[in-house]
Amino acid sequence: MLDLKQAQQEGWCVFQCEGSEAGHLQIQRLDLEAKFPDDADAHRFVIRKAIEGSKYHSDIVLHVIKENPKEAIFILLSILRLMGIKHTNVQPNDAVEIVTKILTFKDNG
Image 1: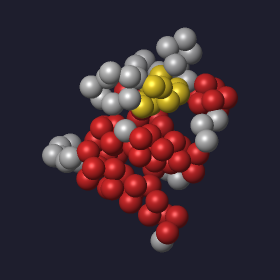
Image 2: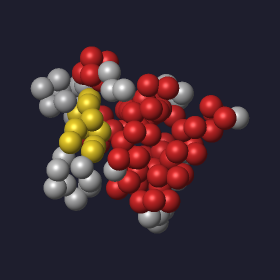
Image 3: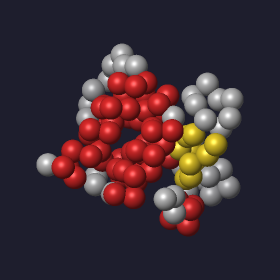
Image 4: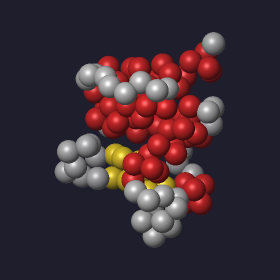
């Protein structure tokens, strides 16, 4: 599912982060590529691409949140910021459902 070549060209990847408070599967920048100043910028890049309609990026985001509901909160907050909404209080499982609906809406509608 994850085309490592494309992700590497774009400067990010999905990493196993065992023991992390943010969960075990995360979207992060490739440090050696340095195409993004930090992980948050790489994260926003992937999410922005997903929102813009990239099936590849949407599939990655959906895979990550399925495996790591904690990451869904960060993804949802990024989506809301892109929409100009600054704050929200949401639980991981709710975030998974909301992000899934946002990213699959155009496929079903």
